[in-house]
Length: 160
Image (cartoon, rainbow, N blue to C red; front, top):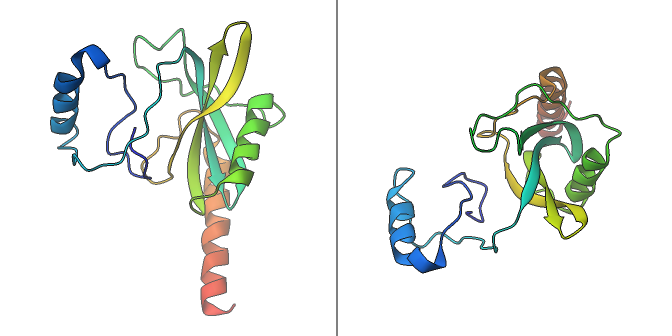
């Protein structure tokens, strides 16, 4: 996965036994990937669930489950599974947002990864707000939070 805020390409598996071919395919995909693009590499991990959270001005506004074992093979994301603000995964997303804020508005994808008998929350990726799907998030909360942010930025800029 690219290590910048652009969705240059999606995270994916590349086989070490077919490395050169897989890299060549990647370089020609997505409209052409620059071979100098810095990427993050991790070993393959078993992921059970994937969530997207929207962060505005340092606060997790809303989030939803978009992928799990039931829809992973179809690649058809859920758009109807919002996450309650009191849930552990929502709280974890806020902890992550407290540690790193690359922009005033961005998204955090959290997954549940399986390690033996343990299920852990992990950061899957952090993305820009502009190019991310909101899936089953609460759009009213997103619109209100981004409007409040824009008004604050305007007032700060022009001294109102």
